[in-house]
Image 1 (cartoon, rainbow, N blue to C red):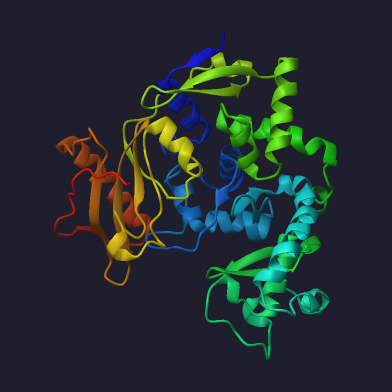
Image 2: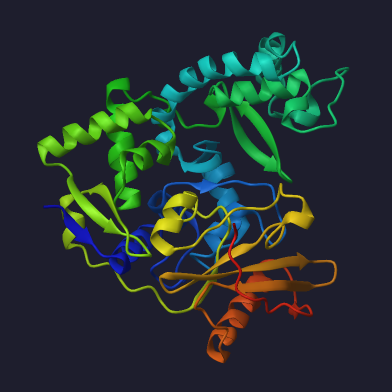
Length: 401
């Protein structure tokens, strides 16, 4: 009979693996920062900067001494981190480059099938031109290529051929991001960015075992679908085959995980997890990035925490339930609300437009004091001098449809 992981324990196990079951204190530079990123797996990169970039907010919520320059040093000088694709653009430990090389060939096949339909003709003709130019002149960005090409006015589907070629060469591993200027990627030849020691491919027959074991380590417990999706490195069929084999060998065991509303879901875990006693998270409030690794899998977050969350950036404003870019709020091991907040650096103010508590959560004086303390810390991180609460910021509990 499968062991049961009660919901409080499941939440704590999951938060502990994502470095959210401890106070956000401690070192946030050098090896300590690298260790943190290795622990949580990856840090998603996103361009929205209403308060701070997603990758900076993710790290700040775990180590509030963190500053963006700390990350840039590891990426651009020390080269212990690099940037590529998981489910989206992400920052990864550089030791994973050998694993990623199997994706480069896979993505080349996939992209050939789709990009020829999506993008303007002519980008393939730019591959050698761009590679030779980078080799000769050094790092280049989108602004440096495409002379004489018609620049698109739309989104990614309207890239000019040289921009498309740069993205292709990056996605297929022939060039790498050497730094960002503003938020624009600057590329160089892979051998000039990734240290030689990490450019040896991991044998293909080891990929599935690595992907499943490492994903299970980061998640604590998971279904085959969750294992496949974690790195987006292997197909679901490979994850299912691995689970069957690992179960037969006794490397993993089947468990029942209790959800937030009492429902049960079958999953797998390592036997040692069943005797693990994760720490109780501190009762302080934390404002999380919408792209936080603990929330990346929206269905898992809803199952474990009863927290339904969707980003409404692409929803027309009149149809938004909450707001353009609303941050989840974590208290202890519960997601207790969401907050619409934006930094107005020219005015020196972090402005709070709305806070919506989850059902059953009251904005008591004690909870409001914790929220104000976290907002003060967030304002300082965002380069603002003060927090301003706009009229009507205390909102009623509301659920997304």
